[in-house]
Amino acid sequence: MTESLVVGVDAGATSSRVAVHTLDGTRVGYARAGAGNPSAHGLDKAVAAIGNALESALPPGGGARVVASLAGVAGLVQEMEPELAKVWARHGIAEGPRCMGDLAIAYAAGSAEPDGSLLLSGTGAAAARLTGFELDAVADAMGWLLGDTGSGFWIGRQAAKAVIEALDRGLPVESLLPGSGHELVSLVGARFLGDERPATPRAAAARIVRLAQADHMRLAALSPLVGQAAEAGDPLAEGIVREAADHLVATLRRVHVSGPVVFAGSVLTNDGPVRRAVSELLAGERVATAGDAAGAASWLAGRDLLPDADARSRHAAFTAASGSPPPAPR
Image (cartoon, rainbow, N blue to C red; front, top):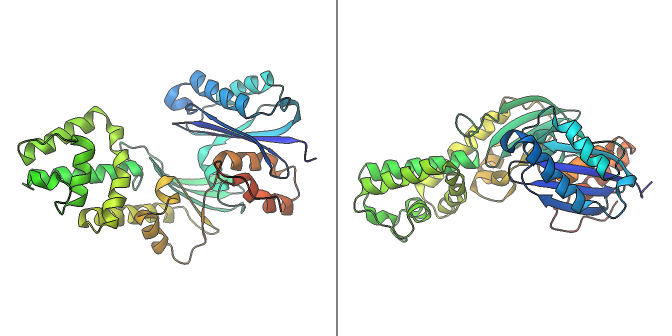
């Protein structure tokens, strides 16, 4: 039985990951390739990326040994499943993967409990209630333009807004310099302006606005700077952190009923002021942190083939971080 293989896919807007495990949880293959979100990048490109990762992850002759597979796909479209089935067939896998959205996979990456909730804050933000590892309710996940409150993008945008508002109100250009006592202003200024020093506060603010408008995803990259400034005691950054935590917990409260709360996304899985603030607000809840989502998809694929006790005990092996060796099967 341990010679049989299961395949899990975590396909997102920036990369696709494929994990291959035996049913005892031993990882025998893992690979990543390009973006696998069909809504953001097109069906053909997404399928090709996942196919490339599958080819790299499968051990030699492994296709015939695959007994189950599951793909968690951000931006999932109906046409994805039959297209992936064709790719699977080319690799000698008898059946294509079952497809589901990425939120359920993110939850399973942190918990073997079938019922619970997910709180995600990465570039985007969402909360979800899971019943039997299936989505029961979702809050937010409305995208960077009108939603995703408390996400990395939202945090970065709030930082940029706070800085340009301060400059527009006359904060001296010297505040952009390191050591000026305005930690967040100087960090954001360095990220956008480099060594450029506009003559007036208004000119500096206008330059940051133009650069942000030219590439809005630059705002998401400001999120770690907010954490850095908050750790240094900057009041602007501390206020953004508190507001982000309040929003994320309010989003979670819209869907959470019982069971564990799984943190997912870089803002919440990495130690930092936002994670700590959210954890404080959720004192009394059972909180877990998501591990490897491709491994979680692999675990879900094999879960129905195992006794419940075995599936639970092997969850940690399947979801161990991809950069480290998995725990020994228990």
